Length: 265
Image (cartoon, rainbow, N blue to C red; front, side):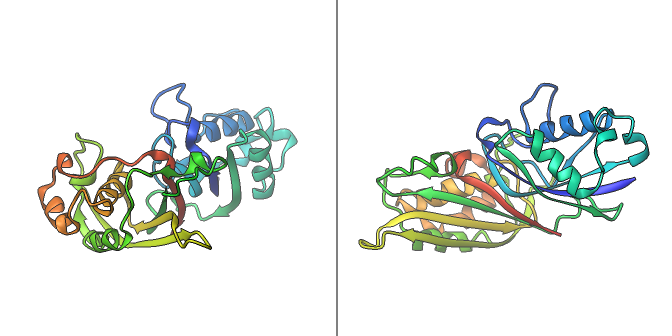
């Protein structure tokens, strides 16, 4: 049995997220598993580092799957294909839709697990504040032009989110039964400015942590936007964390602006 690790990039706009929840769902995991099943003639499982919601993108999603070369040879396509990582990567990219790509493939130890072995994940949220839309990237940003954003206030508020906390107030699943404790290692801001006017055109917020709850980054981002636009106090974050009440936190920022950048092991 060979354990393969792959890195996957995708435009999540037209998908219901990473994870297959029911038969017929249009998901990234589903597309990968369909191709592997076609290759091997067997039902296959692809394990992702974690879920991404519908509409969320990835540059560095990590996944793994196990393949038995002997039994795989019974598949329709396997007889024509070497099962080397290089050949599998070419196979994926030949048959996957244009908005999904496998950017690397390698053999890893049998015990490697894309989800349970992950030490940290980094997501980027992109807010476009320019009055001029970027028509070629509109699916990958959140166009926010309602109010000017004070990035310094957003940074001040974000500092209170660092470390280990119960993030129930920032969880989109109101029926979540497991522990909502997560550790955010860093929240970093960067800006793209106009060369002449020095006006902020885009704001990037990079979140790195040991894991994130459903919609957690999008709710945090919505809360920070409310703070940056003067509709919420910057020092309100500790109170929100203690409250463990989703109703008190900010809006859920759109999925379009969120991208999984990398997973560390």
